[in-house]
Image (cartoon, rainbow over all chains, first blue to last red; front, side):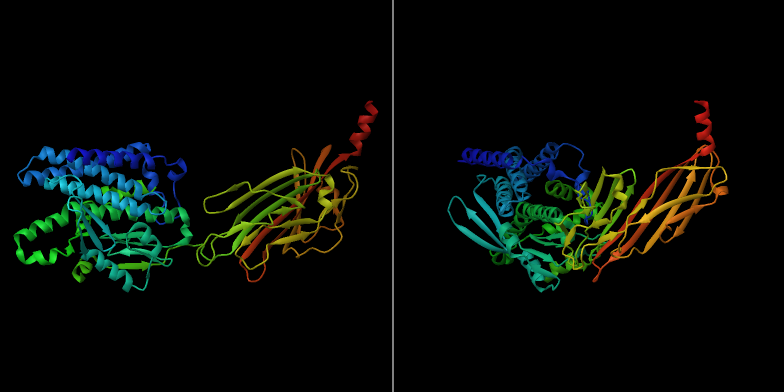
Length: 301
Length: 238
C-alpha cells in the first residue's frame, strides 16, 4: 500500500513538473515601472537552478519535519525523512502549478501542494503517505481519509477572521472570479497600494493565513498584475504548508494533552502560519532575503 | 479572531505615485526639409495613462507627414512610440505646404494635433555671382495661402560663412521677400556658403487639452556666392 502510494506521488510530481517546465524567455522579462520594479530580474542563474533549489528546499523541509516528528514519537528519523522528502517534492510541484496563468491553476496548485504537506504530516505520524489529505478551500479545511473514505470539515479561524476583515474594509472588494479559480479568498483594492503595519514600503499584495489582498492598479499593466497575483498565490501555499505540517499538528498534539481544547479543535483548524512568517521576518530584516519571498518572486517572475 | 487580527496589524491603503496618471497624451515632432529634397522626421509620442490608470492606445489613422504614412520605429515599455524616418523627395518639397497629422490616441477627447504650414522656396539660381563691394540680395517666396493653425513662433536664421569666417543674422517672423546683406557683412573669400533656416513651431492643444502636440518645422535653403573677379580670372587663365 505504502509503495503504491509513493509511486503514485512520484508520478504525479514528475508529471506536474514536466507540464509546467516549459516557460518561455518572454515570461522572464524584467518588469519596470511597477511597485516592485524588476525584483524578478535579481535572479541571474539559469531558471533550472531556481527550480532545483525550490524543489530541494521543499523536499528537505518536508524530510526534516517528518523525520523529527517520527523521532519525537519514538519512530525512525530516517524513514520519516525519506517519506517526508517525497511530500515536500509534491508541495514544490503544487507551487509550480499555482504560479501558472491558466484558469484554475491556483486551485489545482493549492490542492496538490496541500496534498504534499499532508503527505509530510502523514509521514511524521507514521501513516501511509496519502492516508489523510488536508485540503483547504477558502476558510474550510477538508480532511479526506483515503482509508475510510470519510471527509471531515474544520474551520480555519485565522482565514475566516481575515475574510471578515476583507469584507468589512471599504477599500477592499471581494474578487469572486480569482477566489473561485484559486480556492483562496482574494480581495483587491481599487487602484491603491497596500501598506502593512509600520512598513514604509508599499506592497502590491499581502497574504495572511490563506487570504490574499492585492493592489489592483491598472497603470502597472497586465504583466505586473499577473505577477502580483502569482506571487501571493505562492504565499498562500506557503501558509498552507506551514499550517498543515507544523501549526495544526502542534495544536492537535496539545489538544491530546489538554482535554478542554479537544471539542473546539474538532471543528477548528489552527493556522498560525502568518505569525510564524512574521517571526521569521523579524529574523531576516531584508524583505528580498527571506526564503519564502525569494521563492514567491522566483515562481511569479 | 480579533486577537489574531490585532496581532497581525491592519493594512493601510495608499495612492500609487504615478506621475502620468491622467496627464495628456503628448507628441513632440521635428520635421526638417532642405531644398536638396531631403526630408527628416523625428517624433516621440507618449500616449500616457487615462484618468483610471489604463494605458492609452495608439490607433489609426497613423502618423502622416507631407502626405506620407510614417511607421513607428520603436515602442518602449511605457508605451512611448518613436518615429524616425528620412527620405529623398523633389527639391521643390520645401515650397509645398507642410502637413503633419499626429496618430489617433484613445481614449482622448481632443482632436489629434495637425498642421498645414507654409513652405518657403528660393527664387533664382542657387549660385549667386557678386562683385567685391556688391550687396547680396536673396530672393525667397513663401507658399501662398494661410497656415492652419498659425504657428506661435516663426524665426529665420541666415548664415554666411566659409572655412575661416562666418556671419549670422536672425529675426523673428517670416523672412522678407528679399533679404539684403550689405557687402561689408559678407565674408571675404572666393566662395561663401549661405544657409537660410526658416523655423516654425507651435504647441497645439485643442480643448479639452488631453492631446498635446509640440511641432517644429525647419526648412533650409542653400546658396553659394562666387566672386566675379575670381570667375573672370579663371576665364583669362583658360
